[in-house]
Amino acid sequence: MELREETVRKMLRQVYDPELGVNIVDLGLVYDIRVEPDRVFVRMTLTTPGCPMHDTIAGGVRRALTHHAAGRKIEVDVVWEPRWSPEMMTQEAKEQLGFF
Amino acid sequence: MSRLPFLFIISGMAGFALFHAASLLSLSGWLGDDMRGPAGWFHAHLFVLGWATMLAMGAVYQLISVILQSDLYSERLGYVHYAVFTLGLAGLLFGFVRGEIYWIGAFAATAFAGILLFAWNMAATLVRASRWDAITVSAAAAVLYLVLTGLIGMAMGVNFATGWWNDLHDRLFGAHIWLGTVGWFGLLITGFSYKLLPMFYLAHHYPTSLRKAVTVLWNAGVIAGAASFLSGGGKWSVLPALLLIAAAVVLYNAHVVQIRKHRSKRSPGAGIKWSVYGNFAFGAAAVAMSACALWDPNFLSRTKSVTPAVWFYLAGWVSFTMLCYLSKIVPFLWWTRKYGNRAGEPGTPVMSDLLDDRKVNAGLAAIAVCTLLPLSGLMAGSPPIVAAGGTACSFFSVAYMMLIARVFSR
Image (cartoon, rainbow over all chains, first blue to last red; front, side):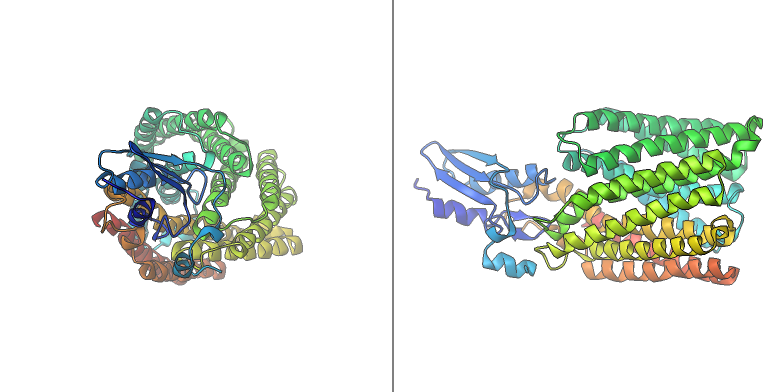
């Protein structure tokens, strides 16, 4: 079954940072998505190094993609470089957080 | 997810409720009494150990891996620590109620053994820390001062039983209070806030050099104060320690302002907002106290000035800050336990769904106002104001804690 990067990105919008209440795509945490025949690969970061939500959010990514991956392995790589910065957020996220 | 932080945090919340229930029963009369009797010891140790230290230890277990970016040395040791410390504390408090010296001694030793287990676990964890900075140094120093506080407390207990060093008792008492309040609580709160405040404000690219200055000054103040008390130096030797701490508090507040200036999120939540107000109030009080002490060094030796200062520090800053952070810690703990393995599924609540921030704001505002009432009563030497203010403070504090506890039903 064909699975596109845009579709994966759309599914990842249902994964939220539970403290901020904003999804990880709009937060700018998703750096790279690759859909391959046998796996779906997501490279992402978190807002704070050592974030206590590390395992929870990575698990959320896997959970959001598993039912749609058509048997593909889900790989989540949490990286700390490049460091996340607030400028990576979408306008929607900035408005939601009252960014200034 | 580990149950260890839960044990300590729920026990701390229970200790808090018990303290305020006991205060309500005595109409806060104990506050105006001589603190150096069994009733005062009971209330003071219930507050300091049963609430504040218990909660602080739980927060340490929850956050240590975030703060240090290395895993806790031993979770099993943490459970043993909990059992030993809680048993010791319960027996100690019972001993104070009964006025039984040997009972107090035995269970104080047990509680101290619990503290040593905690210190061992933290030391082993800190050694593995990926880097040493103001956060790590503050955490390490805080634990060291906790151990020293307990050690001196044990020495005081031995003296009560044997009278071996009666001449030193007052010196030990001063050092015990100073190390525990300013050393353990002060460095733990400031150190952890260097990680937590930027997280909740979503602050980035802020300067960090002030943290080093705060850490150096605060430690210098703790050591100078302890040395002063232990040497029996009197008000003139305590004054430099007070000035060092006041300088540290002023710089700490300046750093908090720097973090706020670099925030990306308009509101960090009512709890964090009120914790910052508490920091500012503490800073103002520290400067005012320093000014009074410079004007009249006898200020530092009067019960009428020292008791309100200790109340303001412990209730107005230490405890209030913990209540503020509790509005983040408890929802985080509960959300992770109940909803963590549903993250990514549609309809999963977020943390703000577990606790109404407007109620947190109202609760903390009420506590802040009420904390000042017994303070003014103590300063005015008015037992009725102490009683009324303390009663109001206890009422709103219990109401706030019930609000927090309701998170566990969400």
